Image (cartoon, rainbow, N blue to C red):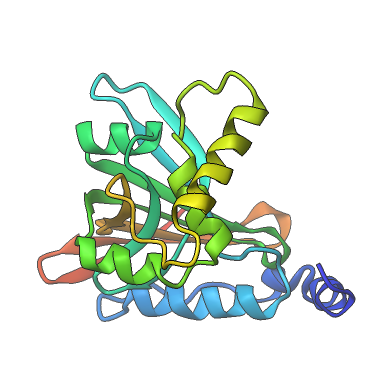
Amino acid sequence: MSLKSSIKTVLTLGQGVAGGLPDAADDADPIELFGLWFDAAKESGILLPEAMTLATATPGGIPSARMVLLKQADQAGFVFFTNYGSQKAQELDANPHAALCFHWAVLQRQVRVSGPVQRIEEDESAAYFATRGRGSQVGAWASRQSAPLPNRPQLEDRVRQIEEEFAGDEIPLPDFWGGYRLKPERIEFWQGRSDRLHDRLRFHRDGPGWATQRLYP
């Protein structure tokens, strides 16, 4: 984090305690509220404000969680990318429901999102893949994500092989890599307040719109 960002982070420390969430209103839009909070997180100087916990589960209900990066959030849903051979992808394909959690500690804010998940179209994945740095593109090809790796040199050898294979050429989208979109059915906003009397506002799908409820801390 840069010195400027560090100063901004210190200045925003405790900001969440002063202001709370609005009252529940059925005409409120949680995606718009998320956008406002996400912008505030980016402006605060927080490192990787797009980082979020992704929780998945096997068909038998055994959960697992890890950090991933949000790449898009709009009315269609929340998009992230991964290797389709990874543990998270295998679990999502077998049990296409997941939960996300954003935690912006310096703002004392948290957002929880849950709903069904599906792969995005290949052309969407290709468009995003083209924006990645060449090193990240090579890494996507070289990694057999979640598979056992005997030693680090084997991975480095695969990176060199991929670099040689595509030397002088654009690197295409691997057929084993792409995006998922979580379509939210529930979104909960948590705002830290003094004396642990926090604000919680939950939105859930209600036909074409949303219904809201304020929750006890």
